[in-house]
Image 1: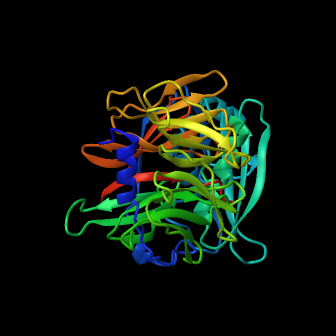
Image 2: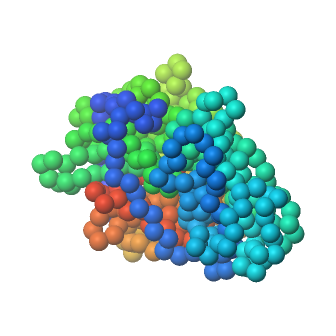
Amino acid sequence: MRVSLTEKSSLYSVSMASGLRAVVLFGLLLLPLLAQAQLRIEIVDGVEGAMPIAVVPFAWESEMPEPASPVHEIISANLARSGLFEPMAEDSMIERPTRPPEVRFGSWRLLRVDHIVIGRVIDAPDGIGQEIEYHLLDVHSGRILLSQALPVAPGDLRFGAHRVTDAVYEELIGIPGAFATRIAYVVVTDIGGPDELFELVVADADGFNPQTVVRNTQPLLSPAWGPEGRRLAYVSFATGRSNVIVQDLFTGQTEVVSSSPGINGAPAFSPDGQRLAVSLSRGGSPDVWVIDLDSGSQEQLTQHWSISTEPAWSPDGERIYFTSDRAGRPQIYVMDADGDNVERVTWEGNYNARVSIGLEERFLATVYSEGDNDFRIAIHDRETERLRVLSDGRLDESPSFAPNGSMLLYGSRENGRGVLAAVSADGRIRQRLVDSEGDVREPAWSPILR
């Protein structure tokens, strides 16, 4: 149980050891034997009056065999999972158009659908891969809102379907979608037993294609994505003490970027990907440092007797937010990226830690408590100075914003085991992501992949 930041940091250093046994990931799919159990996503709450939409089965006009999960099913499932759309069931569709001239808008108006998505999958003109040709149409006006042929590399059809969903979502909602993303998380099996195992896993945002990046009998912690979505930083204990590792997911290459005596933890990439903010205890208590990833040089930013940990960069890279108990209890502070102008940010609640920053720096997500040993996920609005508690668990942790700022992924407890959960930034949409094989924790949401 977390009762203080000091105890948390102590646990942090004990459980932060990380495995140098890097396993070559895939191109993220090279080693099928490293496949993990797939996360099952359950929608707990959605938006009342979600937008009715029909994703009509796409025509398959490719020489390649049609996959088990067709493109239209992936798009429809994505939209349903957002909580903002209510896709029509296929058996309720009385027509199956695949090109705009085939659409009879009157029929769809009678079905009370606002928009339809139609299309087909064809072989790419150069013979390499395929194209997803899709169209988004407004049923009431009869207008074509989107019309595109999206090239898809061989074996990348699911990712292509996610990108189509992103485009549809942005056109209708007004903000970029975050379906073409990945999530990283830690799975622990046989907790406390002789075969206890820690695995760092990367999966698509919908829970598909889970792949183990690193597997070790010693703890793995704090995965953090590089801004290009290719690198992961994490903390490993494979050597018996904590080390900060950066791993290239395409090549499997790893680099130990910090192995100082004491705590090496809480890595966070700068927006340009050239620096890594970390928490090191080289001077006694943990402080925030920045490592230049090219030269390896390290610069200490905080110099305080208290604990300073869990750094997070502002979107423009000009400021670093962090957790400190310098006022007696854990709260969020911010400073310039050179360590100057330290300022306290959170004032409401007895505990605020593990900050995640939204698409706009105005919104900060934290692990929040009023001192009753319940730890929940909250969003602080820096402009209005208002706080909104979003989760309802007792031991919620590790909030991570989606790259479009619309959802928060976090760790929670259910029936005594760790699960992942997600909640929209306005609190109206809730999801649960369940792994059938282990205790799931420490989620991190990737940037949008291109």
